Length: 391
Image 1 (spheres, rainbow, N blue to C red):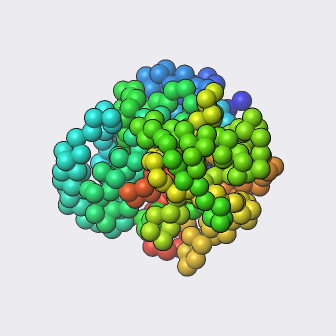
Image 2 (cartoon, rainbow, N blue to C red; image 1 turned 30 degrees about the vertical axis):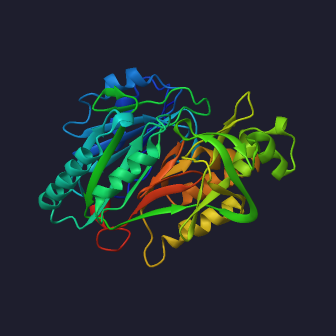
């Protein structure tokens, strides 16, 4: 039986969740979201669902609202980590003004044209919604495009003070094909961007639970276009990575990569460059940009559950957010499973009212990163948690 309860009846966003095999998922989601009107409705769809059929059903189902949808590497719903679900979030017109757009052909992006267009649209949005004092940009991008770094950098050049975050679409742990759609049109090698102004105060954030060690390595041969590393420290990449871990190269798998990530130093910060897999030739394929000469540092994780609870708790200092929209790396979910923390992590996500999806990578500002949780926290417009404007 389909559970038709709304996820949270007292928040800025309208939320809904149904199993992907529900008899009429769009009708059930519409009932949960309520009548609107909405500026934007976003769907995070399990790869187990018939994405094309769902998009045909989405068309026209939410009035004049723009509709974004993407496939996931897992869903974040009422019980935290979920599988086989369709998660929907609606941005009510009473609280939000949204300018939604698609960016196609990421591999041949006209940087100047995109920047000019976004600057103009951001300025127009400011004029259109002067009563909505908070702003952010939300990005959904093809997680197999290998264009996320360039795209995030280009977008950041146009954002000005508007903070940007987002996630790369997924295909479970198969890494075969990911899908996006805007108003029923299915896309690949593309991104969807929502420029948002809101009456609700917001806070965009990025967190990870990884600490750099003293163990460093240098990429000595690589193919940046395919994010493939062939040699580390002058030796075959997988063999050298395994040696530094004290493991047999034949033991390397997704669990190893999730538990033993590498980071790169950028200024005063470290950012994760996660490994996706090892190929039959002993090369390492990464989720993020790599280059020859790049110095990587092995990282070790803190306790993920304790760190997550503490980090999300800092968003409540002064005021508690009513909801959090989050993009959580699939490698964090894999690591949680490996260390038997899935239930604990799920309980924490649920406690902090996090909704969203698991990704193949995350964007924050000008950066594409891995093994992080990026997101935006929504607060009641006038402070009190029972403000009727956020119901």
